[in-house]
Length: 144
Image (cartoon, rainbow, N blue to C red; front, side, top):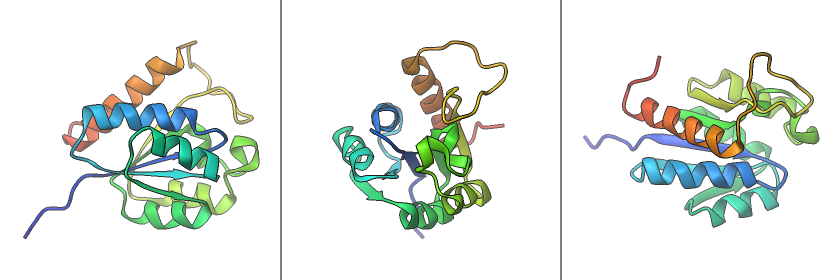
């Protein structure tokens, strides 16, 4: 029986810039992963597609479906908060990500109407690198 590929879902909204950087870094570290990008809008999805991801979808239902089978879900911390990303994360999206059995790799940005206490000022590039490294650890069974 063939073992399925490690399934990574990256979720982003607004312009998708963070998601694009994240998919580029994950593809660099884990080229064998089954990577799916989901934008909360078509602009975010298009941006992540430009980052090299082959599988992409847009909208609430895509998040609900992908959350069921992902091994890792990665994106800004707002993907687990209803109404975050200027309202682009619906309550159903946040619930699906939060309830998923997938490991969540959340990028701690102090935006989305929330502040994460203890987060130091770190460049977005460094946060992306750290998040992609966490995804790789999950793929290799080195998490927790």
